[in-house]
Length: 524
Image 1 (cartoon, rainbow, N blue to C red):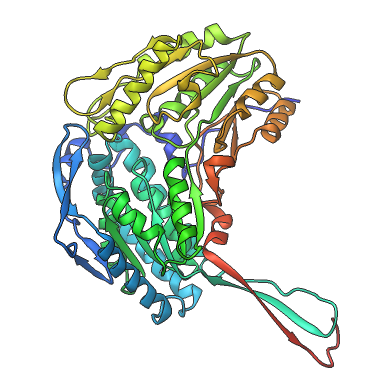
Image 2: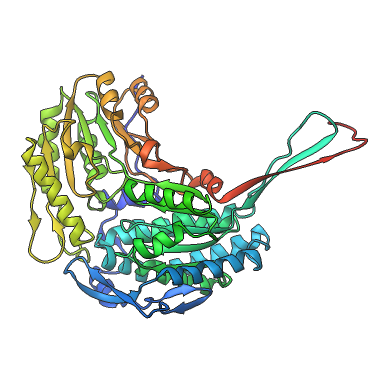
């Protein structure tokens, strides 16, 4: 049996569309120069109980422009006391306020209004995301912000469709379930897709009737703080969505260990995820969902469409500067096509335009921080030291900002550090394999299990590998295709629970059984 190569992505899979170049900058609503000229961060305070406030101790911290390493602005730095105030507001809004008590349809209307306001301000938000994070403006405009808006609208539609079941039982009893909101949700999100990862948490949580305390990443807090202001403008009651900016050891730890938080949702590294889970257990045994790191295998079979596979595998690794938890960072290529594939992959990587993300045509901007840049360069050094063949890149670009050359290694072995650890940067590692049993065993020989990709024209091979790979997502003849309706999450140390889709609602609801006797029923 054969399967055809994947068709062009649907419009909502904009991350794929824009990054592949199907929506060039010339078609965007505004020229890039106007966006950078107009972006002026205005939301720099904590949003607690419906008000923008300074940190209680007055402290702030600098937000840096990754293009230059210079300060953009200062934002409020939340302490444990600020988190207490945010949790108190969320607790009161849940226990006494209208949000969980209004109809699901009314909650949905407010969430739709929130999404509409985000759309009205989409140019501002896209420019802020690029300024703060360093990703190309084409990504922020065409992927991040539209997907945030779509995600909110998707879960706004779910708000009046969350319900339990009537369950037939033996005896004269009526039994049914209720799906109730968990309560106060603490959400801690990373810096690689700042507002999108926030939307993945807050949209299902709010749809189900919970209240939220969101901690934005200290590297990239600007869009979350601005979105919180727009949520209030949309009519969300005070205390329903609270946003704090600060450091993980202060604000993040306070949320994870807070006795009045009922559930914590975290996206980030596996190392920190374990700490979040430990703090949740040691406090009030709060519910936890984790979307963590990955070292995802991307498998190119001998019968793959080579041109498509090279382009898709390039996208799987280099999208968002390699700063993706599900990046296809272990690229297994069949020995029959290995040499030609490596040659083409190297040529493709050398065509990447690295530069100012506000400039037209730039494919890759700076990494998010000095720490991240040097971490990536350290991994590149280890690859060279351990005997991998450096075929492209490998160096820092320029002396200002956090730019790293797109890098390709060939003849990578499973034991090498670059094949085992999550790099989170533009470093492609290409490995050779001989047969499907071998590549399945090697692909699964990791503590991670977030995603995988397969390129083949055989339906039998696609079915076989998709079932044998231990990963939460398996893409066939495509990669990084996202939609609000499909679940995302990992096996093993890549986390627990699922973001997105109907499955995400399970993370933010409790199931309650109600049972009562019935007498004289005509049927059972």
